[in-house]
Image (cartoon, rainbow, N blue to C red; front, side, top):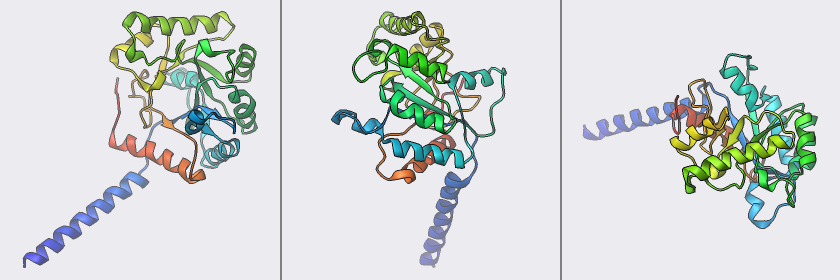
Length: 264
């Protein structure tokens, strides 16, 4: 008798696990995915290898997004929709690039334009013009061609390691330097190393930014704090397009589970 009860309990447990797994994978979920890239191309130093997506893989990823019905928007368009100033496409997605590597101009931009897509780039302002990084002329040209420019601080120091005064200076100087050099409307921000807390998020708002992205995986809804937006990291691929699809799925699963959700 007890063996029959154990088998029944195990069967119920198995059915429950399968049902929960099916819900995680297949149930629709609302929210805007924001993808986090760094480098595109083949030329990476050893310590940069985890952050570079080969050009062919990047093109395949954009092919997949188009086939899946996604339309790219910028962070400026995203927050405008949040404020009721515009509507979003049926399946919006944001492509973001941190740091401002030179290959974003030579490798990423041609692929992006060939797909008719848009992106947002977060610049470390004191690295602009340095070896392996974008020049001011390239940055201005990218903005003219529809790429939004945002801030990644002046010196890429994790803000949680700085004093409140130093945090405010990093936020202010980055924005100011880029505006002085002809970059328009710097309203988007990315936390270096994804390091932030509630006080830092408040300082980002005080500095005149309208959005800030983290390194937390998930999707973003109208209830997500605009200064604690979640992103799906896209590193150097090892399993081709399947890895990319799994990372998109991970973002959906994290959203369903409610992990890292910071609500206004």
